[in-house]
Length: 338
Ligand code: H2U
Ligand code: ZN
Image 1 (tube, rainbow, N blue to C red):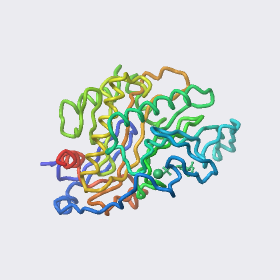
Image 2: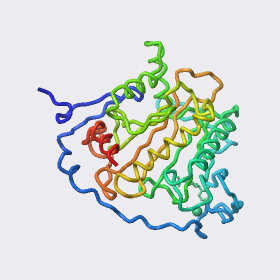
Image 3: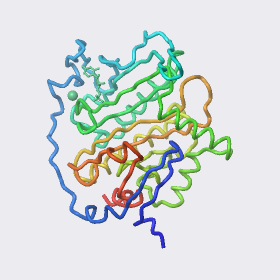
């Protein structure tokens, strides 16, 4: 008899249309071991050497204002520039390149250097949500911008350059890879089934509750059935929304609430500020309605079995396909238990 909790199998991600290999038999012992607690360096509320703290000089030569809530600025080392002309290059169907304009910004969540999403007051987090909506509308309304990617790298392990609570926005002319793949999947689902892929998925997870971590009136956090990272999660809106700009006031509060609760749960898992990359996926800003799109966030944390042991996507995963040991159901159970 095949045992889905023990025997190797592969699972399908309907958003990326990629498979992940699950090898649960490899886990059981290490996961039952003790979890380690690592003392995170205590950060001051203000750091005179931080380039994001209020009043400080940035590396680019500008000086931050004495801001007291959120603070948005153009990235001094932007990966995309607004002045780039749109051009294409193609040779023999093999050498293909495209130029494209874009705008990169940084949002400081708070003037306080030592806060994180999990530790912010609900009202202050709501201001961060408002800033995201404002930026999505501002950048997305420009002709040259086809997609607005909002994301946060947290922790040195994920390459964040600074502990000051902040996120980045890269608004590009073209739609990036991950987003365009998810778009094709959602379009195909809508065409074939006359429904929304993530509305259907959220309904299924709410009924089963096996992979569910957090829920409020407007959102649900789950470890997706097809998760690659050990403690990967998705935050999905219960209502069909194509983008963050469709949130009502109450839903903006609920987004702040579920992000706070999800990140706090992460921090409790190994007793450390949990590193991750997270960000929103939503409709492109090319002016089309894109009703196939369902607003959601992905959290990709690298930690595997303790504060100090991370998962690497290497070897078989680079050459063949991603693989995980702990099942998504067991990961959800562990996250629910803290
Ligand atoms: P990360 O921690 O995710 O790297 O984000 C910090 C961003 O801040 C990074 O993209 C920018 C970097 O280019 N930055 C400035 O714009 N000005 C500075 O003075 C330093 C860092
Ligand atoms: Zn700071």
